[in-house]
Image (tube, rainbow, N blue to C red; front, side):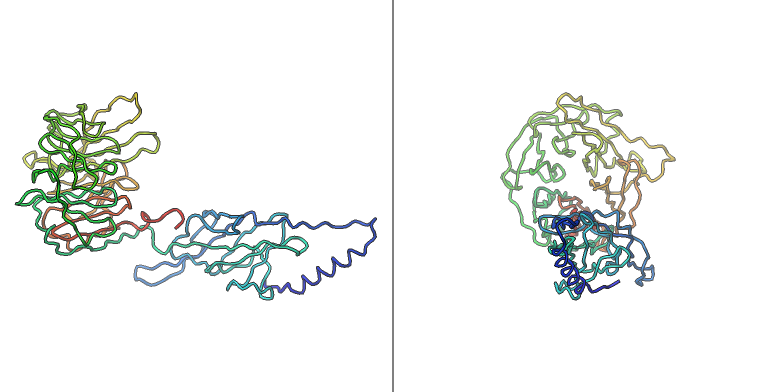
Length: 456
């Protein structure tokens, strides 16, 4: 319903001039200039998608517009949705519900943002509106002598949320390819790779925005080649266990000794505040950056602890404050005859008066479905929802029940070159990117939704 209202304003003006001639004992109407848009929402929207054959198709009323809240900035006269609509949402013809203070009239300016009143139309909740570009909307006072003008912007995601993209960064990097064993650690704004070579331990780093150029880091301590698996990240520092001593560094080059304990055998991992390491008796924790260590209880004999391919991830527990859930995954010696990977978990409570919980072994029933299979190498990382794991079999797994079950995620297809043999490294940075390093190749990838901010 497109009505030109230029003439109507002239009519209103004439009416007002006539009302001034009325006698003082007759009722007069007072008009207010206090007006604003007080609420804004969208109806159902169509969405374009692709069929299995790759053809575009339009799904009618596929998106419920009322599920997406619109924020009204009265100071800057801006209206926009806090969460973007799904990718492919059609915004060229949308029904909107616009509420104004004092039921003041709402006027839609031309779609090209022209302020020419001759091209404007009255708003109607039954008429579709083109929001494919920012749209000017005016709300007039009852006497049409003043108005407030808003810019309405409807944000739509440009990417599908659960599409996973890998980016090949370094290719045939001879320095990284020379490692016979390696571990990747994300720390601060950098990715570090600690590798074992015939010459000893080598350390390389790259910015988490790069991945193509790798800079060798020379440590001020002579670490052993096998220490490449003794490195973890906590906060903005790297920690390494070497010959019973704990060292910390913010850049991989300058290391300072933090503590010494001859019983420490292998660095296991870190939570947000604690370090964990193997001893001859089990697992110990350091709550003071490696200065001292305390043994923790195990609910199963320590022979069930994994000895190879160790990786530990920490996840917050939303229902409990100051509590984290830790999962330790790895494999045992082939002589144990395991058909599945070995998993332990631990709940750490950071309250001052909390008692240390024991580590628990996942003893799974033979009929338990979706167990993590035994393989030459498997590493895990925390995800936004649960945990993920990468296996040397070229499969990507996810667990949304704290590591109890693992299902292959068909949405993540590994790069073709990952299929070659050789040890690999796997980590996740603070931008939610997963990193894989294998045979001199480096890949970085994430789900699109993991990179979206709330305003995207």
